[in-house]
Length: 88
Figure 1 (tube, rainbow, N blue to C red):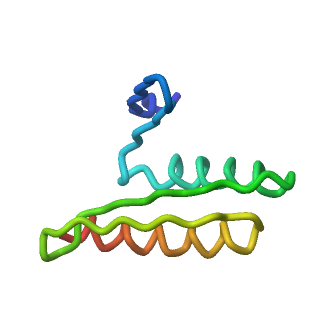
Figure 2: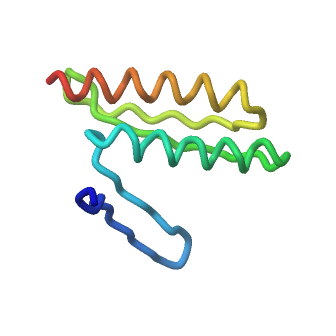
């Protein structure tokens, strides 16, 4: 049996937030696949993504994803971003 995956969940009056380690590529991919299934059923999602750049400033972007092609593109960009962050 594998070691349990570490996640953190926070709940407030507006959001249910799951934090997963960026090193766990399998778990990150599973979450993205789950969101892809949601979108595939015709249910769009609005994604707000933020990260710290190499210069130390915060970058925030918002996008509406309504197709599996869009979620695949976002997943690819997210994987590239995670890869860059892990190389720091």
